[in-house]
Length: 214
Image (spheres, rainbow, N blue to C red):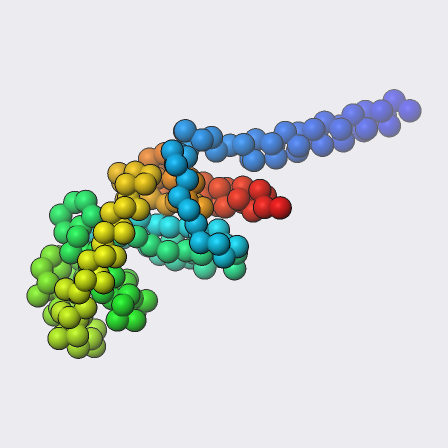
């Protein structure tokens, strides 16, 4: 009988320990410490998806080094998550890089050239700070130079850049890379503790959004 009671006590302790550990795991990320809440939540598309946005800068070395892990992470987000990027406008070349990003998107070659832009800047020393340098780069990728210039200088791309500025101000974005979740939460490598952990915090916030659904 005594042995049975000891065994039962051990099992109960293990169960309590597991529940406690799960509780710590669920609450390990704290608002105001590991992530920030937007003062005014941003309206999201009414499509039933959780919208996740990365704010990045092509010349940012941290964005470049995170890119491979970010791509792997993005592929594992699930069908209920919509991932997008917004190029920030601060630092040298911010606006030209943003125009380059949206021009590539408009031309339908963004997936083809996104990693190559990072590589050109951080591996090949091609800063791509001028329109002519960007045009030469895009021509190397098989894009018509005149068409690139037409789109790059268009009012549509100017409007996209303005929208990027508005998105930055909404949180506000002061560091790259950083991630927003559901228009409500903002995570940086600094708040999370590292850029890799930033993805973990974003996972936590996504799971919270799923749990909050009816």
